[in-house]
Length: 371
Image 1 (cartoon, rainbow, N blue to C red):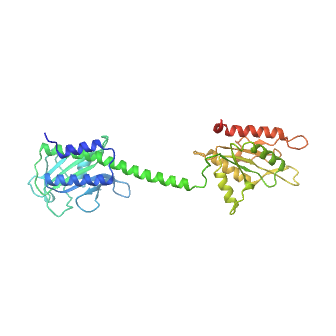
Image 2 (image 1 turned 30 degrees about the vertical axis):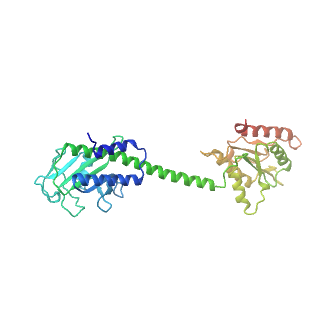
Image 3 (image 1 turned 90 degrees about the horizontal axis):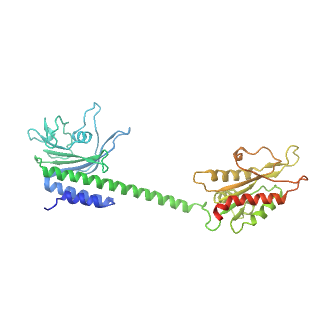
């Protein structure tokens, strides 16, 4: 037995994975041509559930139709009545084959007959979108592919008074099922297209970013005040020099490119995976403390602190260093394990102990990457 158009259409819908906009338009044209030739359909429309008011009210909106225009409809009027037979079909999930009881045009009929489901008390036919007399309206709910709820409705309108047949009911039901599958495949394709476009845009933005880490060695940013203890700074630099095979060390005072030095420092901090910040600078003629925390180094340390605690961290950790003979630690770093500069009774740096502790801290910081 030869298969029908709807049987071929449902086979197509179940066998494809992606339906783009061009394919969707071609399928629409094929369905239109088929129903026009077999049912003398004058007007054909597919409406999907959509927001139809600024308040977010759900209703039906035309996806495509044989008549020009962008149509949308509420399901019920302000008085609670159905706006028309399409709204009724959608809300009641009911297939309708509507003709006038006296076979007159639907727009002027006083009483309707539903030849498909035998429904009574149908709302008024109020959809004269074309300038001809419609005698038959066939309205079929389009179920979602997963069976949960409705996607929309199909509306076939003919100038002829058409009697319902089992073959026609089956054929139109198959078209409705196929259109459900195809519509959701098209929606998926559109969503994938938008997601791909967004992902590419984000990738382009990442590539344009000047904060990308180096691919060779991870960068470590070292900051210290210009008025810091030079002996401590030299000890830190000696230790960092031992890691040149594993780390690309950038010191704030070695940045020599022309331009805004503050912007360059920010760029270096944001592209560094690790950091070492020696906060302390000497204070002259202060009877209470001999050191204080430098504001510029604190600012750079705060950036490293925020980056290392972000959800998608750009920094993997940093080491704060300060003198114990200083005011209270800044609250921002109270939870960090600060490396205090060890000093001998005469005030000189305990260089051996300080270097050993700093090496231990750096090893712990980077061993997950280089073990």
